[in-house]
Amino acid sequence: MSKRTDYISWDEYFMGVALLSGKRSKDPSTQVGACIVNQQNKIVGVGYNGLPIGISDDQFPWQNEGNFLETKYPYVCHAELNAILNNIGINLSGCKIYTALFPCNECSKAIIQSGISEVIYLSDKYAGKENFIAAKRMLQTAGIRLRKMTPGVNEVTLSFDEKGV
Ligand SMILES: O=c1ccn([C@H]2C[C@H](O)[C@@H](COP(=O)(O)O)O2)c(=O)[nH]1
Ligand SMILES: [Zn+2]
Image 1 (cartoon, rainbow, N blue to C red):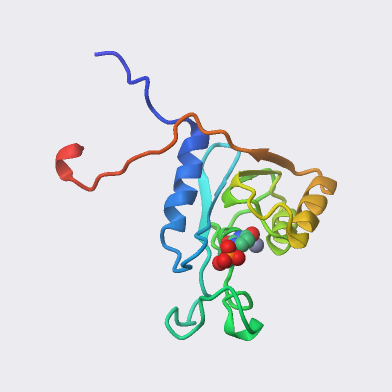
Image 2 (cartoon, rainbow, N blue to C red; image 1 turned 135 degrees about the vertical axis):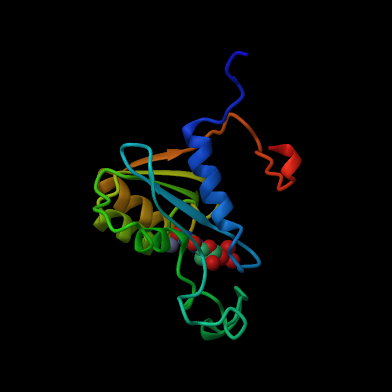
């Protein structure tokens, strides 16, 4: 038997982990997942956008419009920040972060301060917004490599059917 040739690439694997992590998000409009990888291609942190520990998903708002305090924005901890904070307790210098959405200005500050050296993203849907323009400006000035991922496959299907293993 010869080896499989249709296996996913490292990029697809790590972005896949980021996307799977985003499936945990309760945000009804935008689910973001992030996955941090070290120079040995080992996953050292994952996260998704959600409320901080101890704050109930059911008692805080999820809307994205209206009175600021009645929206999710002041409360949600972003995926990239969660991945950094959830890391296995190492120095993240030289690591890469895979994220479903280009990081905002606040996540970008945390990325820069943590020593992460590359950001790989899928969507840049907020590229025109001021906080994302600021994010790009900071990341570029800090010398962080920015790469929009072009996957070789459109989707990866997961089955929990034991017969599929
Ligand atoms: O860097 C980022 C930017 C945003 N997010 C999260 C925060 C929110 O939960 C959603 C954005 O919601 P919209 O309704 O699309 O404005 O994305 C993040 O995790 N990381
Ligand atoms: Zn952010």
